[in-house]
Length: 334
Length: 304
Image (cartoon, rainbow over all chains, first blue to last red; front, side):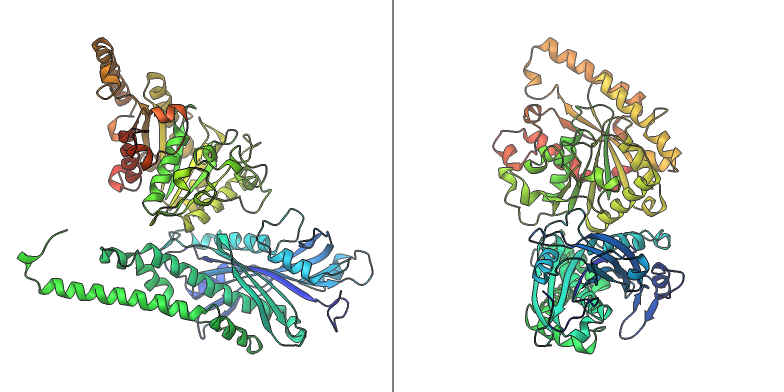
């Protein structure tokens, strides 16, 4: 099955995974150090941007693959080509690594020379029928990827490990708070009526999230733009996941408010200023952020949590002011 | 914090006590992960009562990861997957409890640069997420001990807090063996220095734990004939002397876990329910709680 209007050799489907983590560093790393961490290639620069937030992105690296496509039906469709990987550091604090690829139908039934695949970076070509549903459901499945199956997550993980191991981080590796990693698996295929839509966004166990997109052909032709959108979603989902966790651990409402405020301080110091949904999303994809803001409502949940944290601070401050006014002899010690 | 559990001999209660300490920390709200580096005889899954990985996993465990066969080792959520009745309902305010099982066929293997590198990456990555990373090492001066000594000497790990518990039973042979494991020519200290550790720092990061210790002053030992009690007291004193001579005395001891009938029968987690219902001794539970608390008390570790 081929999407209407698809041409042989041109990706009909994009798949990728973004892994998001706290950078191993007590303080946020300066922009210049982020550039050092992300210098994955000698022949291509790290992209640095300072508005509206600090963002550093590595050049892309390619990995050659000859394996089978993900599938729920168990079809073992061989594919050959390259997977792209890139990493970014946001505000010196959040590290992301992404692996992604497009799937195209090969012209002819035989494997070509590597030069052929290198001329189509980030595309894998299949020798069988391309069953979009089967691939998408296989790729977004929550189970572990079987051996021999194309795994964008493993590509992302290797890159995350590589950047994390950079010696420039040594000496300052204690993290300011314990955080959870998240993985966003995403797919994008052609929209029947040419309009970008989110088919599904789910949260699963173990920090796994899945996002299924339908996009106009012109957007599918720009995989980097789609990957950037997914990185933005992944970063904000990570922020939300970790803020929820910090607030949960703070046991707000329990008797010891000073303790609660102490445990929230990493959120205040490290996370609250990072919220900027859609900051680096292409115009044609920004309506999709509005959809996510409606349901499940990322910013709504974020603002509620931020307000809770600020309320705790306010109450704590009031209790301190009150304690100062109470004469010492009336104070009870704890 | 990274916490390594070692013992010179098997049967010292190392795994079961370590698992109980991990459990106690999780109950108090810490996110905890437990790595079964007991290559060859994985036991942690049995203690946590996770039947599906009880004999280790066939592939994708820690052994496969360290050898580079899989990009990430398998993780088991203990609260979700345990068959232990008292554990199935996760208590309010408790932290996560995650087990990284070993592979069933995984014996010892050669120490290579890549393996140490993967070990460093894994421990860094877990330290990012968990309050306590507990590593159960196979008995003796094993490959696992050597690997983590090499890993924790690397620049990317050396700056993180690493502590060691050395478990032994309260007998002459066990005390001598435990002391040898730490201070011997091929002991942890000597090997650690060989890998680049600072000897004094490493020494301060190692504490002994006496496990399965009969208390001559408590039930049932104080109810045996007087001659036996006095014999036991004498033994106890002699062991104290021996421990002091071998630098395993009180200043180097983090805690003592009493001989517990339940653990003689089965290697399990001692729950509050067990202690409150009288199945397990409350003294055992209290000792585990105290020991779990001391893991993070800097003054117990001679921090300078």
